[in-house]
Image 1 (tube, rainbow, N blue to C red):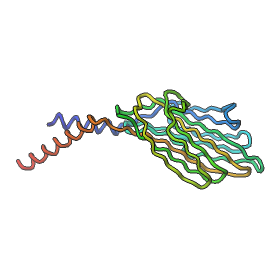
Image 2 (image 1 turned 90 degrees about the vertical axis):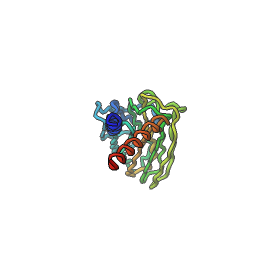
Image 3 (image 1 turned 30 degrees about the vertical axis):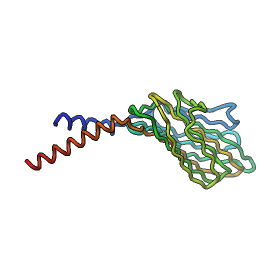
Image 4 (image 1 turned 180 degrees about the vertical axis):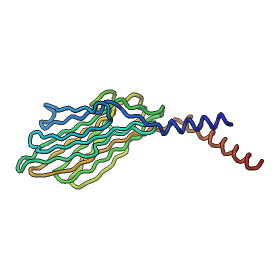
Length: 218
């Protein structure tokens, strides 16, 4: 019984252990992808950059990545953009990270969230893959298009997701002239446990409960 308790304690410790994916990169374009400016985080797990390009007089991008044994996530925590008066335009922002790793599972459950204020509208596409900025159409997780002052969230199942994998967010902002907008986007992926794993944990907790009851009755 002591061995069983030690095994369960080790499993719980593993669940709480945190790691960080290590190749977070951001790239943006104001000419519909003809040219990109790319910035890497250098392995820190977060990026914050300020710039200007084309009709956008101010661009501020903040992004964060996390990978634990129970969660792989990619967040555009803050996207602030300002266009000059009478000079609207389209801004493409792509955020990507790899490698992510999750425990063996039947697949994964993904949740994509998007909030947008002002401007015209935004479109967010999310993907999983095997490399940075891997946006194969077959691996699209979600495609969301919302107007100004809107919040939306979509849940998706990814069958057969295998390690290591990448996550990518592709945000397209169509913004009118003389406008400042604020956008946030999130992508989180959690594993769907295999039945054997859940059964093992269930038997273990049942054994601990029986052991505790016998001790109290002794």
